[in-house]
Length: 336
Image 1 (cartoon, helix red, strand yellow):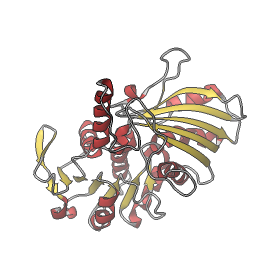
Image 2: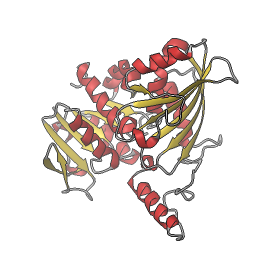
Image 3: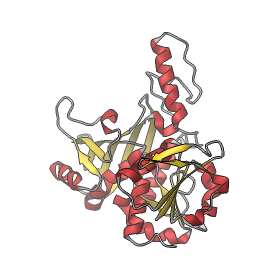
Image 4: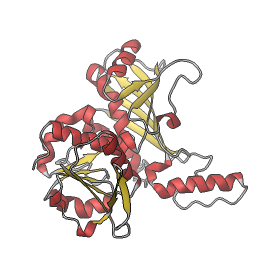
């Protein structure tokens, strides 16, 4: 089938291209679409150069599925127009709270893909919510998650290419004893941690923290109580999550490890010794959601601690989007 990627020149767009090629996704023709600034550029796919097409001039009736990886402003302006002619899988936050648009993580709630017929748009979840619900789904099915205390430690790639470049330049300046200037962060990011992602809300939380609550409840269970703190750390790629999870039922720690080891998309690396866990650097370019430091919370009954790590550009964005498309095809929902 014919496929389009809107925002093909960005971080996530390029990752979608990589995933499509690695997974040998069934493509007849691939259309790479971006703003007029990028029109005419060449990007390789399967050893062949593809010319980037101006979004303003692209005809979406040429494709069965269009991946949107260009942010909320582009999604707001173009996704509904595109959805009149094709199925849109949008990676931005713009449609996630819309009750008529499914918010999908294939390992968790693929049955809700049938609701694509409402508006021909599917929303891809937040890059830290995706690995969190992938790890929680099999445990929720067995023990019922009651409450989660979440702390996310998010890499700068979650903010885009320019913030990645800023981390590198700030690091060089720091090591050279030069003055550090911050353009894309509220404070110095090199050798630092910033407890602030996105803008503040009236309740004192940030939008990123509110998204964690809203999306976990929409995807997994609206009855789950959640509180979160989201931190930007000086890591280029991969998000990490510390999750304190309270269940309604008693659990067995060995059973939890066994369940997660067998669950789709999960990989348990949990040895109680030096280095017996996964870090962001090791998760980069991996498809799996890694779970480590699995241990009982001795301060509260029916509660477990988990350390969850995944590549935010892959499972947190591009890979999840492509897996949504694969499920659409399996369920024969890709024909309008």
